[in-house]
Length: 317
Image (cartoon, rainbow, N blue to C red; front, side):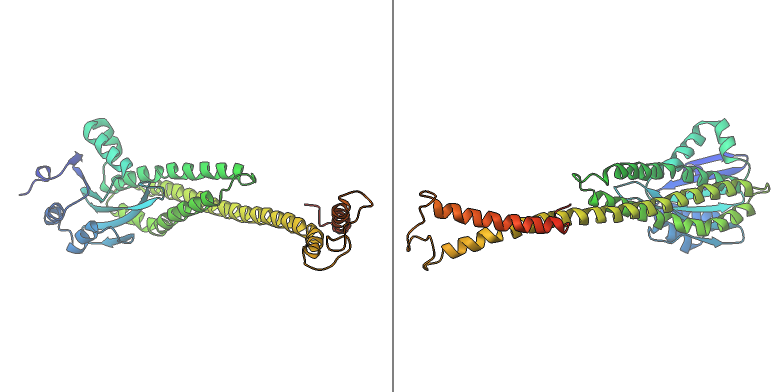
């Protein structure tokens, strides 16, 4: 008879076995399948990274797939956790690192008293503790999101700093978290029912507590989504207003320069004009009389336009 200890790290207490497998290979899962009579399709699901959350029920065990976020990069990525739960065993299989789970498994191996406390007397209770420790870890990405929201709130009204890119990155992070966590809400009630099958004691209060934690995290994520959408709209409005002010200033400057441009264009043409070189320059105000008259005409025209713009409120930014 194949012994589990020959192939896997096993934690035992009160006749209950817990096996945790990280980055599984087909040979190891086939060995487990022979021992516990797992379905071949469930073994294939454990080797795949793209399965949707689900529960498969069998007469003597249940197979559960859940997704949890891990911060492997700037954007949370889903890590798949597969759980086989029977009357006297729990098998957890995950591709990649689930630090709360692996840490809990290691502590159970080295501390007998803690092992009895965490694993309890039934596989259903152990499933609760596994999900609970991972759900509690969701507070870390949530705190990171809220910290980024506070930073953006302080910067969104600063005209000297552009935060459009930071807002876009945070929206992407929030969307990724929601995409991972929303399916968990739908499937969690079924997980609680299946875990209860393998526990003689009533563990519904414990699962209700975990469900409450998930709901609070989702509520916080939804609130963060609404907040970042508000900041995005605010940033767009402020940037549009800033752009309009710049365009208004440039338009006013260009408009006030039109009289000087027109006068300069006339005197730059090869035609006879009063005060021009061909007809003889004006001298009644000195050698630069023509230049002075040209400047005065341009300035008076610009001043008249400025008064007109001011009375209509176009110079008030």
